[in-house]
Length: 406
Image (tube, rainbow, N blue to C red):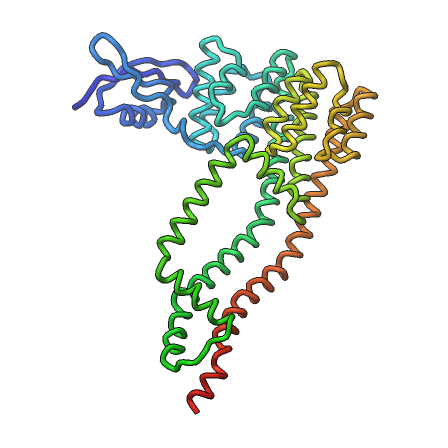
């Protein structure tokens, strides 16, 4: 049944337009308005003398990628620097961004700014799109009157984070694919190949070698109790996920990651890069040191390092320097601590942190390149060992079978 909807939209010139339409639901109203060349801000369904909110900016629940945020920030900075008003800039960004989710968020932010909210307040209503780091820097930029410079810094920072993440993911892609291939081959052999040999062994009789008996028993367990194996894996995975979400579990899990051979060094260097880059950007934007440390602890993405940063924040509250409390935590290398101490003494802590971030970023790149070169032959050996070991275990009894046939 058709209902009456009131709407608020923006035309192509950025003017606010209000009106009403009849349709079966709010989504159809939004589609009709887009066809008319409008950008929907809010759509309400009229019910008696009151209005019930039916739809407010489609796609707002969709995921916004960091790469889209980086492009958004750079375009935002360029237009603000060119002298465009905030409302006009947000209207243009909402129209031209390729991400539908981010376009909806930008239009919502524009509507809030038009109602009198500051840009940082409007952005804070969308925590899934804009992090605490982003909002705090925008707030500092607004206060200092250097919003364009802050947005440019944010774009640079996010682009570097995206590049770093892409390199790590690309390095991990190969071992994950090979591991999946090994699991698939081993599972197929246990479920289909080994049972065929088991029937042959039963017909011919004779004692089986120990490796073959182990393989046959594992195959029987997989064939007869596959549902139990899958159920145990699912339960274990869910239990691990819930344990990791707890504070104690996350700290133990992150500590284990740091102790892993080879990979642990990569995880530590990536976390130190995020720490140095984030703290540097916040301090350069004029965010207070205590707030900067708090935001950095939330964005460093490692519970062990975050705990150390929070302890440092507590020390700074009572008048200590930033570097001295960090020196008490083994997670932070002496080189980083010493450079921070020099930065504090010279009043150039943000510059020193930038240099530290560049250093560890280069270290991550070198580690990723070395790790990729190292993992390729190792994984080939592992795959060959697993498959070859099973084949050898299956063919060991053949010598006895030949004797039995004779």
